[in-house]
Image: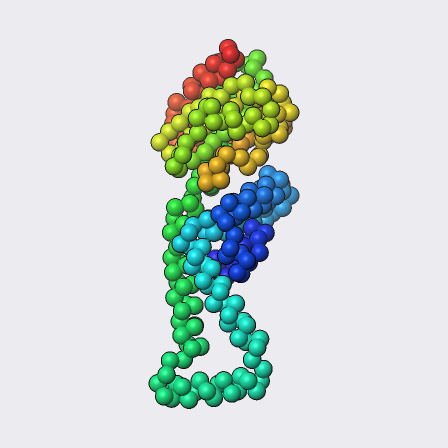
Length: 285
């Protein structure tokens, strides 16, 4: 359950009072570092890689949300105070405290233990509601983007109907992102991928909810360096895959037909014609 997870430790940060003092910039920096370490592309042989990466994203979403983080810090503080009380109380002291609390209850005085438990339950309940709100807003976005780009990549592997047969597609990347808040322009994408090498061209295709682009790097090495990287905005990262993987995977005709139908549902029946035009344009540049 999310309220029982130490979200600071998931990001490799100190917890408790020290964690509560961390700035949003420090949390974002820790998330980026961990994302590079735990990304499934970096751990192809780890069966838990995807689950661990999703856990990392969930912890980051909670800590970057101001209200959720405040509730979580309050919950940690109450739990820490509770643990400290238990450590400090030896058998005799606990007996004396129990007798005192019993007399206070008998005199209709408020019980601090019950009050602390009720406060802990209240904050935990509010935190669950905040987590549910965050999950509703962000939960399905990463999976939908990965699924769409995976199907687009498999379609390009078959080579069906792709124009510009002479074009070196080993230097090209497929990039996708969700249209949440800020958007990506060709100039911005050039700036993002210039850290891996010279960018020759960028061609963007957009819909109301999803953006995608073909990025042509100057060399194959630059394409390889950018592949699978975590880049772009932390709130809306780019999903980067090669246009033509080094080793193509064969599919049965039934699987190819099913994936083509799925692709049409995701990006529209005219996507293949669009890709033909884009590849012709890049070849002419």
